[in-house]
Amino acid sequence: MSAPLYDRLKTKADGTARVRTAILAMTVCKRAWNVARRDRPREIPLDNPFAKMGLAYKAKATRPVTHAELVRFVAAADKAGEGSIGTAAMIAFFWLQRQEDILTRLAWTHYRPADAPGIVRVFHHKTGELVEVPLFDTDGTSLWPEMTARLDALPRRGTLIVTRDQLDRRRKVHLPWQPDYFRHQVAEIREAAGIDAEVKFMGLRHGGNVEGAEAGLTDAQLRALSGHLTTAALLRYAQTTAAQRREGARKRLEARTKREGLSK
Image 1 (spheres, rainbow, N blue to C red):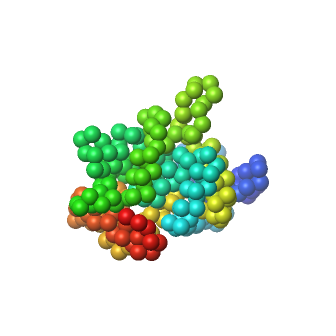
Image 2: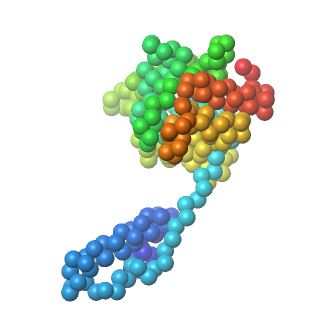
Image 3: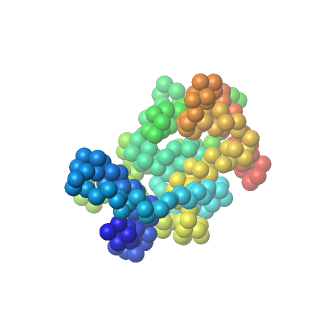
């Protein structure tokens, strides 16, 4: 019973694999069988058919996107008339925000707000952190020149920074991106940019973190920028200050400038 069910679940109707989903389903079935057995031992057999499948899943490591690939991806998005996707990619790479937050939460009021025009407020729903990322160094140098130049030149089409580029035919407004369609468009742009299919949108955030690590940011500086708090020790001892965020942003800019000749 269990093996045929697993075989059916691990492949989608279109022929693509969904092994992780199938294994999760078998795990749930195994636990449900055990619970039912304890509740009704006379009706449920002792032998659990889901307990002997020996299934295991090891998630593939997310391949980080490089800065050079980001540049190609943004150029391909702009050429395709999907500049908002290029903007989303830049936000994920530079400000380390997750796709869901970029598409549904990042508003124009978060960018250079009236009460603090030198920052962008980046919310991370997964950790509940609101990170105030500095846009300028203490001497006025832009810490994210590509990002600020792009956003300052964008038309403000609604509350959210990232919306679909084309007007909705019926509502005559720029609607937010829906995850499935966004994913489809990202795949097409990725292919046009000559980036391998293994690269996912989340790889942009990973790539930004890798850039930070290679630039010599400390663990505290990386977490101060990303809002990714995972250990009790870090929460207890690492103070995520504006100074750390500024220093971390400065190191990333300096490393990128040195490597690729980016003009400040």
